[in-house]
Length: 218
Image (cartoon, rainbow, N blue to C red; front, top):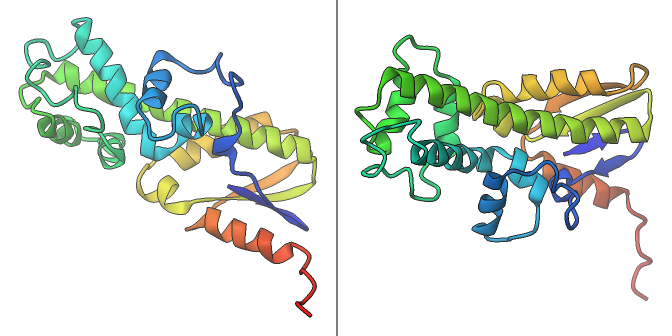
């Protein structure tokens, strides 16, 4: 994400974590996800808020609940839920878009995990947990944006974020992040949050464009 002012600021918020900076906000699920990621100890905030990681966080929570006998009783051991990465961003999107009375979208996702015979209560709980995981991610992202906006202390700012992640894959993330950011910024700091495809790449290009040009080779 980056902010557009008289100058361009490419925030790379996902990397804003050094050492144990986020230790009081991370859960056992965040720590396990990080441990088995391709870059342990890095991009901690990104692993807590990015749509690409929400599915794995959801999976880890559901595994813990199943092991405690709170979900999928009699079905858990034969399911694919224990497989890392078995719930992805598309699955989170389906569950978040599930407004059906019989939880058909959620049941479709569970069916892919060999959980075809789960109860209606199981489906309802899965939808609720997915919503909580999504909200936490959106609120953490909002906290980072609000801190940046308040620190820059400008009267008018535009924050550009990658559009597909917010609008296509997840139906609520954009709205949740927008509303919580509005709650946290100072009233005098007006901002607009927009979805922009390839926002990160465009931000890097605009920053590079604004840098002083090196002298030509002799």
